Image 1 (tube, rainbow, N blue to C red):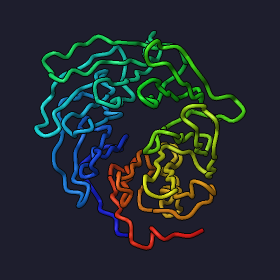
Image 2: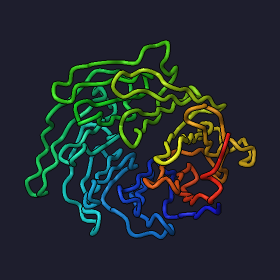
Image 3: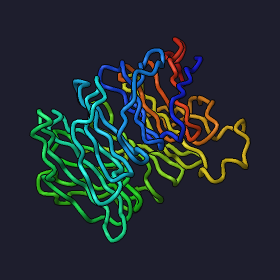
Length: 326
C-alpha cells in the first residue's frame, strides 16, 4: 500500500472530506485555502480562494455542486465546487469551527467558538437553492455549553443536532426548538476535550475521539455507549470504514512537543481497530507530525489522512486488507 503524497498546503491540515461519489477529496488547512483533489490519483484539481484565516472545516453537498467552509476569519462561505467562485458569505462574531449540510442540503449547522464576551453557539441556516436568494438569518441559535464546540452534526432525518467539544459532554438537541434532549453521562463519557466526531454511513451510530486517549462509539438515538477504543496518545481524528467493521484513530502529542520526538517512534500513525472486538489490527505510518484529519472514501477502498506536517496522504488498500482476520 504505497501512499500518494499530496502536497498543496503550506500549513497543518485541519479537515478532510470526500464527496458522496468518492471521486473528489476536499482538504482544509490553516493556510486559508481549501483545496480539492482527485481522489483516485491525488492530483490537485483546484483551490477556493477568499478566506482570510485558518479554515477549520468544510462539507460538500450531495450533488457535489456546493462546498461550504468555516474559518477563523469569522465567516462561513458557500462555493461553487466546479468554478471555485464564492456564492455567499455568512459572517459571525467569532471563528466558525464546524459546518455540515443536512440531508437534502437545504439546511446547514454551523458552530462558532467562544470569542471575547461571546459564548460558543450552534447556528442553523437555511441554504437557498439560488445563491441570489440566500439570507444571513439563522433559523435557530443554540447557546449553552461552556467552552468550544468542536463538532456539530445532524441526527437522523434532520430532527436532532449532535454536538461535542471542550467540556467532553455529547449533547443531542432538537433541531426545531433548540431544546436539549439528551447528554452523555459523566461515567461512560469522555474525560477530556472531544476533538472529533464522525457518523456511520447509515447514521445509526457515531464515533468520537478525545484527548483522553480514547475513541468511543455511541448509539445515535439513545446516546448509549457501545464500544471504547483505547490508545496511548491523544486522539485528534477518527474515521469509520463504510465497508468493513474497522475504525481508524489518528493523533499524536501536542504540536508543541513534536520536535522532541523521533517520527520513527511511531505515535504519528493511523491506527486501525476492529469495530466489534475493539482490538488493534494495524497501523499506517508516515506523517511527520500529529494526524489532524482522517476520512474514508465512501466505497471503503481507500482512506486519507492529513497531518500537522502539511501533507495529505492518500492510501488505496491492498487486496489483502479486505481479508484481515482477527
